Image (cartoon, rainbow, N blue to C red; front, side, top):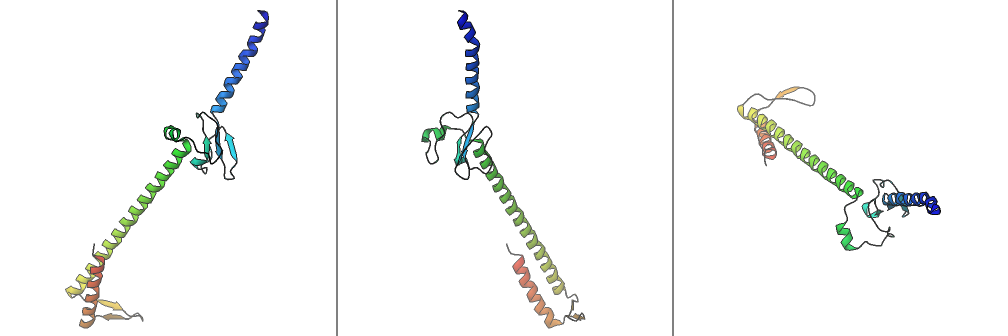
Length: 168
């Protein structure tokens, strides 16, 4: 009996070492980098690694497959998404949301500009039609008043501007 009691600590130590190694193996990531090399790490791959290049992640059992070898179809459907896949989907949703918000802001700015142009054109047309004296400045800086012919031409232009900016 004495010989077996001397071996007990060695057996326990060997079992503990085996368990520690198996936990470390379960916590391993494996992925292919840009150069196609297989990389093993206890940390998740960088964000620039595509999800399809991730060969193994912690908690998965089995052997890492060489690139090009596909996983069975059933296990691909049943396997949970990797952290990298979830991160990629999150970033995609963020980008789509930012694009939608940018488009909406551009549309609102465009509508606001059109409304402002419309109101300005209508105000100018009202001034012309009310008969108020309109003064222009010529290229030399001299003031000139519109006569009836110029006023009629300016009213026609103002009506076109109202029609253009106040539609839709």
